[in-house]
Length: 191
Image (cartoon, rainbow, N blue to C red; front, top):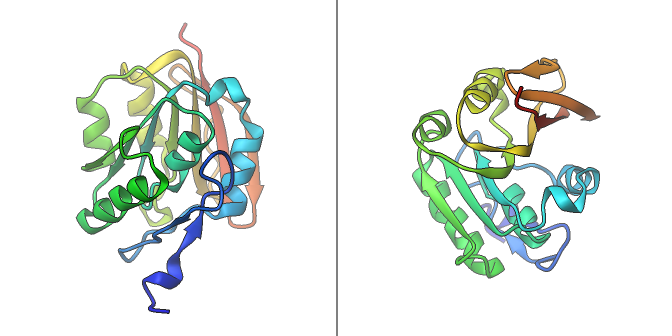
């Protein structure tokens, strides 16, 4: 097996369960593990995923957004700045049968976020840990028209960081830790 194929991972659950995805094509991309993806979607209620429009920022392999589609999301936009990774992400959409239910955008996540409107019902962010604190991206998202009123935002980050309890219209309602990974769950609650 070539090194590139050894990075294969699977969709954890839903209608595409078990389908293998191409792994990281570019250095520095750290896909969310199957264990953590399964935990995220087990914590989310079905109503937070089913029939929702999803945005997967810092998408990498697209595993988080594809997991949402597999569990009944209506549409997913994937934002990844690495061109080679965008090609593999598009290939992952095709191999899972979601090419008509999602689109890969090869762009910087923060710039894309500032130029696009939602509404999205679910936002998934798992930026590279080397980029540091995702609070800037969360703040830009909270200040934008990207999220619908009851949207959920899930943020992966290093367990060494503590994210704020609230950012603009976003309120953290849960946080979990999985080794070096931490996940923050926010709900959009406009004032």
